[in-house]
Length: 174
Image (cartoon, rainbow, N blue to C red; front, side, top):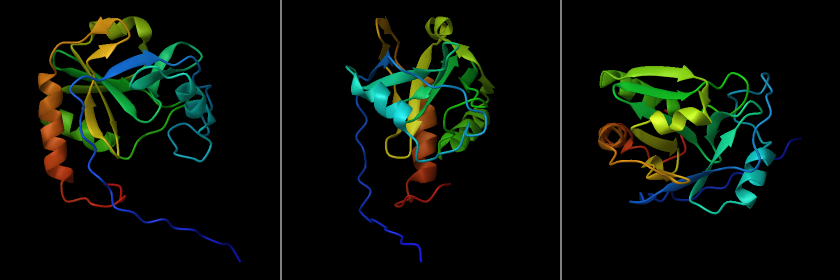
């Protein structure tokens, strides 16, 4: 007979930081289309990437130097009226809040795209933010030595996200 262990605890609200910096992880993902997008128990790639972390979070790349995610969440880039997030068809995890964020961005008349994003394209972004189920949405102020301006559109998306998710007090995916 299988044994299941369930741990239940209160979900505390994470405080957004005013300044949040990213670096590029020294290790990254290897493509595995069979597991792409799925949240599974093998997180060794993220564990290794966090082992040398010197900033708030690290950007994970694939073997072709395309941006996939951060170690504990999804990443989004805003340029003008376009929001781009990495394509996760070869590796990475489609987070539980990602589809909601993309829908909210579309409702704000942003042109939403999932595409391959090279590290060379980062400096084209007006704003960058990350998301996961604990922190919600966190604006990024710098990526290594590149500093980003104030995140006005990110704040609009974050307010809309919080209004939709404010009553969710559990791990339940929306």
